[in-house]
Length: 217
Ligand SMILES: C[S@@+](CC[C@H](N)C(=O)[O-])C[C@H]1O[C@@H](n2cnc3c(N)ncnc32)[C@H](O)[C@@H]1O
Image (tube, rainbow, N blue to C red):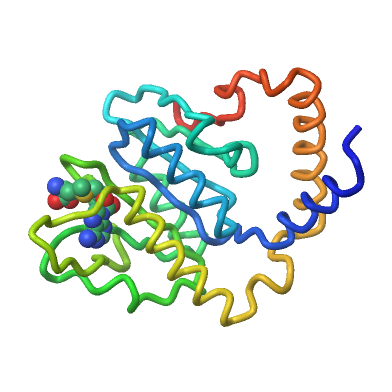
């Protein structure tokens, strides 16, 4: 069993989770970037991280990069054929789809209202975000760049945007009251306590892939 301090910590973390701030990584191929993004996501209270890879392949997690954050966020690997319907579904659920795309018409990332339910979409090093997803964007954003290089590493860019979202949400008091329903919170807590207990007994040797859910395969 976990001690009371650990359980209180899980309760606190769940109270601050922002289920309506979600991240999707399109065309992902770097396991290091996925791991770094998961760590930043956990830091601002993101619960759900979705990703699709070019070859529909699984991407490994680096525990040395996540420092355990992969255990306190939910990770979903999505088939490429499912991407467009996934985005449309999020829109139907009331999410604004905020897509990073390095184009002239893009607005600065600070101009978006992230207190609204938001799906933030990030791309990869070569292709960025797929054009079929850019077409579905409610907002196209860019982080202003003043140097010789045109773009940031995707995990750095994700961290900057998520911290703008965190700033806005903190100002509007979104971390003061739990956004998860009490049923959902209890459900996640039970799963996390169970998994944490097993992880401690097995000295963290739970296969990381089991912690990932699959969509559309
Ligand atoms: C290296 S960039 C992609 C460059 C790609 N050639 C393009 O034109 O989209 C990788 C990803 O990091 C994010 N990114 C990097 N720099 C960014 C910036 N200045 N503004 C917004 N997103 C950025 C975006 O998600 C982007 O798809």
